[in-house]
Amino acid sequence: MRRAALRFAGAVAVAVALTLTSTATAVAGAKPGKGPKTDQPRVEKLSDTLLDPRALYFVSYDGLVNNNSFQQDAVLTHAGYQYAAWYTETRHAVVARRALKGGTPGEWETVRLPHRLSADDSHNVISLGVSPRDGRLHVAMDTHNTRLYYVKSEPGLASRPAAHDWTIERFGEVQRTLDGVELGGMTYPRFLVTPEGELQLSYRTGGSGNGTLELAEYAGGTWRKLGVWSSATGPWTGPNGVVSQTRNMYLHGLTYDETGRLHAAFTWREGNWDVLCHPGGLTNHDTGYVYSDDRGRTWRNDAGDVVGVTGSDPVGITDPGLVVDPLGPNHGLMNQESQAVDSRGNPHVVVSYVPGRFTQCVTDYAADRARWGRTFHVFRDSDGTWTKREVPVPPNHTQRTKLVFDDDDNAYLVMPKGRIVAASAESGWSDWTVLFDQPSMNAYGEVNVDTSRLASDGVLSVQYQQSSSGTSPSPIRVVDFKLG
Image (tube, rainbow, N blue to C red; front, side, top):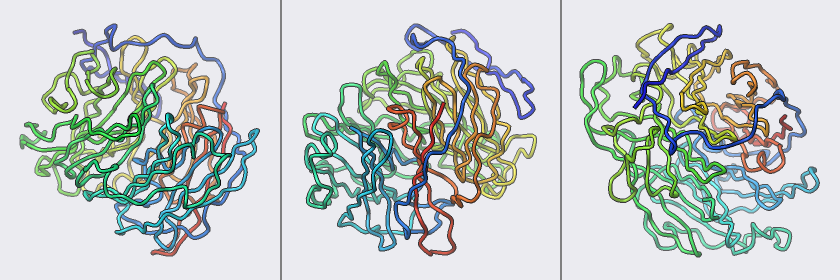
């Protein structure tokens, strides 16, 4: 293995060399892609539409149940129609759609599902998925270490939307299993579509600090479990010498690129909080990366070495070559932020934490992150080198940022409250600039983005909920931007 430098540029664009192990092989290296990029990032606001004037509102774990970074997806586009989901003031789950005709969206149509949110817990989000082969819309919701609530539509509703009216009769009953496949207590349902058009569901079993990641797959109209692919056990020693024996892997996302490679960036959270310098911090540490070239069956590290097999030999803390950006547990590193893949198939990750220049010991992670937290862009170059740069725009918030690319590989960060910061591919993603900042949106914090619409027509749809007080319902909206 060769040693590769992890390049870092701070807010004042001063390069500081760090070194970590990273190997680029023919297996893990860059894929052929587009040529050099020259167009600069641009943002043009197109519209801002109302989904619901009185959406359910409560703050839990510093977030809202209708907008959380781990929803994949709360808003998505398929076959010329866009779909969105949220809980309304009666706690009912709502799914809406609108036609995207000639670039001019139609009116939103809504269906209220026969399910009401069971707990005031912002983990219990709604995630949407489409199975392209049979055109069903799938809805996973309302779970935090509990059994899932699951609904799917009739065939063809998403693949031939204009041929179907938007009514509750188009949806099946609310289930606690995946058509009879029992998942047990689980959290963070994420849908993703394989290059072959099969639908997958990622989820965590167990809990924070002691949990595993699993995959299920919907093929031929039938769900089946693929099994566990991350391990909760193994020794890890904190900087104070304390050993933790359990943890969970928190994903920044699961993303298929154009070649069919599945990318997964993550951070670990330890179960033993004694690894911290102060109990008010977070036990999250390190940014790791693995990938799969067989739809999540086998997992490899950045060097291309097999480090896990789903269902039999999960990826664990003691496996080699997982960490691409080392960071100890005393910096309030946030979990489940964001990732994306550029046109060359290279992974990019957004993380945020309190840098050591402010403190080496976070004592109140929410307050310290709001005061000192900074956002970092971590990505792999085409030569296999991992680079890290601090984004010179503080989030000034506890919440997380979303990352997307336009057709020219310019990177856009949708930060808390809907502020958009971008950097050009031509600069090597070093010229970060604020392109959109509209406080009058009154967005609470985290937002959801529609990556599928951005890929199909270059329009970024951002779902956000406006701030309120206490538990007073507030509007939830979708704002559209033309990028590039």
